[in-house]
Length: 252
Image (cartoon, rainbow, N blue to C red):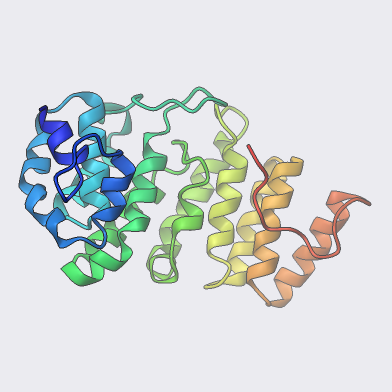
């Protein structure tokens, strides 16, 4: 049995051939995952490209310091991450490994509280937000940020959006919508700022998809600026724009 199968392809009751995601999410409720942590850390440093990525996902989902540290290190030099390019988005043909890492950080919320690693979780989110102006997250970053993380990361989110503005036209993926989603994440904490950021993105690109995602700013904030922004979106969307903009993301 390979080391990977033993750690992430075997259930906590010892059944081999288990699905990785089943093991991953069972570990959130099963303390027996802790016994696998030291060997997962070893796999993180010496496995294949895919094994190292999934070891990082598991350690991060299980709120382990080694997982958060690996996420932060990967974000520091994205293209040098040992698993960069291991997952490629089918629509845009760009790396999508950071989307999986963002989801792992999000899923670790409860265990981070139990293990005392909540601060490291926020630090991992910060590292990911700081590269959201150039790396693809497949809608798995902004919507995963909980209120506590958003409050801590408002300056980082604003900086990432502003860095991304001049890159929108040349980005190999839909950066405008990714930035609007980040702006919308701020809306419950700072509505006026969220509106300003969203308006700045739409000034660069106002596609139908970006406009629809911008409606989340209106849904999440009751400030006067947000209400005015809602009217702007309605006018920009034309006659077919709904009276109460939808916030659900359309199928990709």
